[in-house]
Image (cartoon, rainbow, N blue to C red; front, side):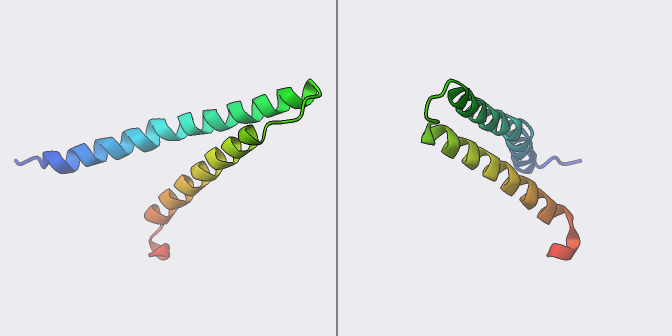
Length: 77
């Protein structure tokens, strides 16, 4: 029996990136939205940076999910 360690390391790396990285990215987006909402409640102008970070984080999460669906559904190939 032969184990292709290079392929196994690639699978492990992608699993860690998508398995742990996506929830972390989503958490950053939720944190940015929360800071924006807190600023609005305190009657301060919301930061453009918080809005941009939240939008980018959520867009990256949606893109990763759609890419995963593309890989799993054979009719898309």
